[in-house]
Amino acid sequence: MDAEQFQRIAKALADPRRFEILEHIAKQAEVGCRRLCGCFPVRQATISHHLKELASAGLVESRREGQFVYYRTRPAVLDAYMTELRRRVDMPALGTKSVDAPAGPRATRRKPVAAKRA
Image (cartoon, rainbow, N blue to C red; front, side, top):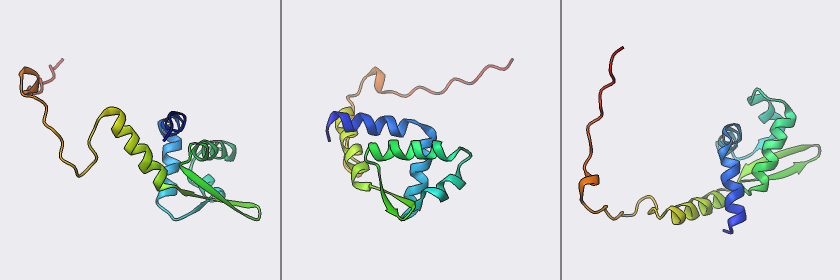
C-alpha cells in the first residue's frame, strides 16, 4: 500500500459519521444509497460526499443499476491498511506472540489514584 492511499484511508476513517456509514455498509452484502440516506440524520448530499470519500480511499466500491447506486465494502483494502498500520507502529498482528517489553521501573503498573471528593 502506498503512502497516499494509507493517508486517504486514515482520513476517511477519522470522520465519525463516515466511519458509521462504513460500519453500516459492512453489516450487509450491499446497501443502496437511498437506504443509507434513511439511516442517518443528514442530507443526501452529505451521505453522497461521505460515500465519495470512502470510495476514493478504496474502502467501498459502487455498482450502478439504472438510477440507483449500491455500495459494498472492500475487506481486502481494510486488511491491507491494518497490516500497514501494524507495520508502521511496529505491532504484531492479532493471534501472533508479542515480545514482552524489558523489565524495569516503567514496566511496573501503578494503582489508579482515587478521585478526590469536592
